[in-house]
Image 1 (cartoon, rainbow, N blue to C red):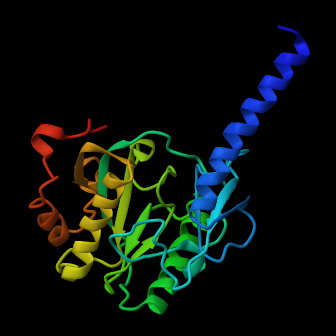
Image 2 (spheres, rainbow, N blue to C red; image 1 turned 120 degrees about the vertical axis):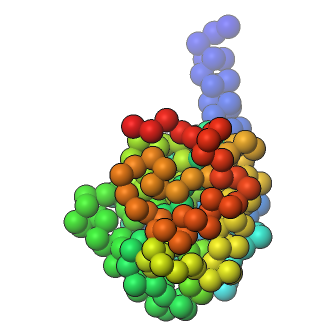
Length: 243
């Protein structure tokens, strides 16, 4: 095979692969663009060729993104006004763990209140803690909505030693002595099902509270007691190694 033929074949291969990836973005009515560019909907990773900063911007007409999860209401980063992350590290495989947290902040009861709190949490994480972005994968308000944090396919900063092998959902508020509303609890279950359906979590995934792997009272006594009754919670047989 001549060098020229090899070059042509390599170029064809890259073009074909790139086209297929871009086609996936187009199938969602999205546009491949640099993630520093404003997106009217939600950025979805792994649908565009090129560097990791080239992502698929999928428009959202009502402030929620069905491309994140179709079974629950998820408010995208663009809708609540998230800052651009300093850096994005992707998770390439399905993960075995789903961690539940609480923010230990005031709670929120509508999208406006929740967006304000989310911006405050993100600013604290990035400015004071030195994180690349808001730490959690997703957050849930007392309005029953899920708010996109780092989202699917992105390494978070929520559970030390486990961030690259798990997703972390945090209920907005302090749940030491009270439970989130039923709609919020159901949203957390629906989010886990979404992650399973989309292949972001393993079929055998297990659910845990933050305190199961760290010296903390997170996600609060009342919420922790609640999640211990959920089907996917099985600390005895499926506990991650505690550092």
